[in-house]
Length: 211
Ligand code: ADP
Ligand code: 5GP
Image 1 (cartoon, protein in one colour):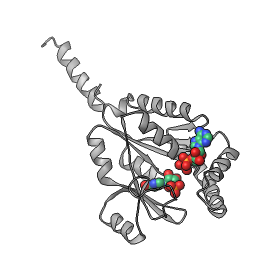
Image 2 (cartoon, helix red, strand yellow; image 1 turned 45 degrees about the horizontal axis):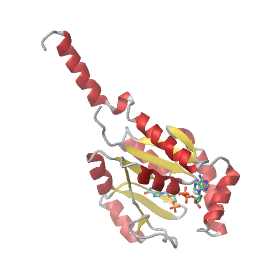
Image 3 (cartoon, protein in one colour; image 1 turned 30 degrees about the vertical axis):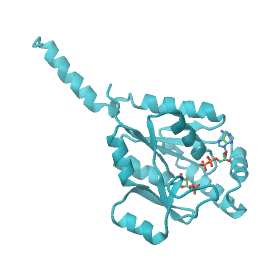
């Protein structure tokens, strides 16, 4: 069956391990292209412009919104985040699955505009572990951690909108599970309409004995 690129949306509470998982997934498999978002938040000490994010000010971000340069965007904890359009479109055309690591408002915009998108929600094994990971990462102040935990309460209300939840307990196991879910999603009939129409037409011809 011909492999066509699909959009893979990965959401989850801050600290659940999305960034860590996605880095491993793209290292292990060639099938995936990881989209780099634009944001107005400041870089963390270990982040580089153009690697984790395209960091920009509010005015530059709003210009991108205005000229249609983003496939989706949202405001998260006082900052804008959005997905640049050019990379997504070119990689999908090249047959790659494009991974968007984005929050729920953006995920729902994608579902509307790209009906074949696969929506995955990464969860930690339990809430205490989430707090441990968020604190252990050491990149946010206590006030920001509290703000992100509050946001997690809100995000939890939207989990049912997603196609699958994926528990990030053991990292390697979770990477394998993600890859298996994505592989299986490619074989759903609604993501293969062209293939199905073609084989139907071929069968009609064969059944008439014309070939
Ligand atoms: P997110 O991108 O979802 O905010 P990160 O990928 O930054 O989360 O992970 C948050 C912290 O948890 C990091 O310090 C990371 O090393 C750690 N982490 C991620 N996955 C696991 C895991 N499976 N087990 C233990 N620690 C993990
Ligand atoms: P962080 O500041 O921890 O890197 O990201 C905060 C939140 O913004 C995370 O839930 C992350 O998934 C989300 N996010 C990152 N990039 C985008 C984006 O392009 N669009 C949307 N809607 N959310 C994003």
